[in-house]
Image (cartoon, rainbow, N blue to C red; front, top):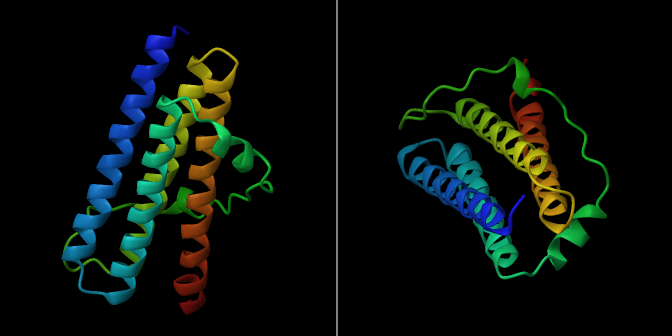
Length: 154
């Protein structure tokens, strides 16, 4: 894939991360449940980190991708596959927020996997694959909270 096309994909990914950050931040101000608010702010912080990594990628710094690649394999708990994500409102509780975040992270991971598939092998493809893994890791993180805080109630 041409360098200009890769740059456009990265810029699109930066925009996606900004949108996710804004969504989680905005939702955190609307929900009343303290646990849901904290969870949303944590997700917003993760999206901000992704944006920063993508900006480094545009600048040619791929050192962060090497450290991500060395991490242990991520286990997908597949909790999100059975969940329905409803739009977040001020009355959203922790369960609704977590379901929404799981689905969002799942979509982001699929997006990066598609970007990797569209990119020729090399640093850009490796980086998109690392970002896909990171999104799966974030999904796993949110699923683990869901499992601890929601499934334990059943």
